[in-house]
Length: 457
Ligand code: ARG
Image (tube, rainbow, N blue to C red; front, side, top):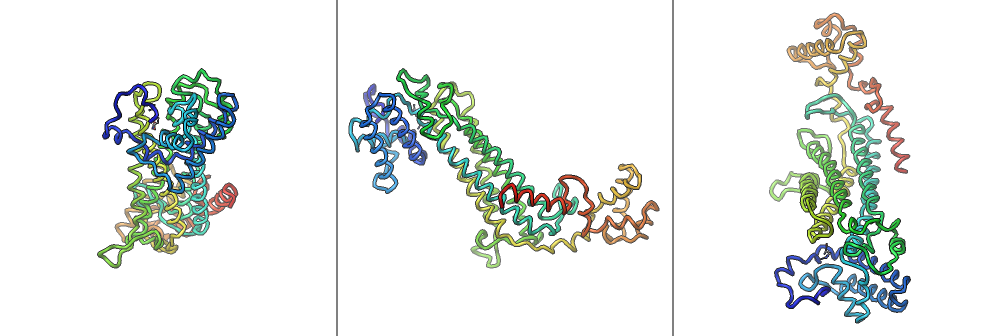
């Protein structure tokens, strides 16, 4: 027990259970010990502890960690309020009263702020690496499918033809923006909270630069009250995880559609699909569905923590303890989803011919025909109207744009010449695209090269 002195009786059983965060924050045990080791090293350096006391405590902390990792010491929520009290109690059992010097000049408020920042630093780095791996798989798939034509959609209605490469590279762009968000999270945890105390620093000559350096932070935070009250980096991480999940959910939904009999565009690998307990023929895209659903959780976690933070007076409040459950859940959900989506795209088989014939039987080159008229000098509004008439003529006569003959076009308007037919071929329509960022195959090939250089593939 860390704080018994002023209490006459011990805590109610339900209150203990209700308030213990051990089950969640035991995950921070390595960071907690890393922080404590830095703290006692510094306490010796400034002469508050003797070198031998400091060493006894450090060795004791290593034993606590080893015991926990080997399973010989199993801290439980009935006994301990949180990871910090569990470690200190076990340390006391192992090394005796000198353990009481560990917490000199420290509060659990700056301790927990330190632990979770250390953890965040490690995890944000991992997520950036997972995103890089995700991007590599996307770029490799895009490279294979530079000529795989497919309809591009708006409103889930066919808009204009594109390639699968063009479509997949959208997710590479999203991942690049996600990486920027996680780098911002890394920046937000670059300073050390340790030495901020409960809220107002310490009267002891703690060397905050030294502890910051020992833990690999670039320096100490500048304002103790702000430090113990700050959870902005968690909001940033919850936001980054939500946005990342939103991105994955969009592709998940597309994969679900693409793998239907109706779309019949892709086949997902056995290792990321499941069967039905009743219908023997079924192959279900469960991972994609779960990613879609779990996006609700990461969005919810962000909303939860925004609600926890709202109107909280300075500085530390026990409300903060709810932060880690949300943060860990969002990070785990996002990192698992990212890895599964990477597997899904990597192993996805594509029916490359699926839309070749299909695109000859739709109106997705209507804009190209309007552009042809514009080049002939017609105002775009008139061109739009005239192509609308061509589409109606096709509908009335049971034809599609790529099937039109010169005579058909002439029937609608004599402004059309045989040259107009040139823009009505799905096979060559992409080569006519001129703008930066368009699906022109030459541009996409250049984009792939640039991504490969950027990602060191
Ligand atoms: N378990 C607490 C948390 O996660 C640690 C800090 C407790 N501080 C306190 N003064 N009760 O926020």
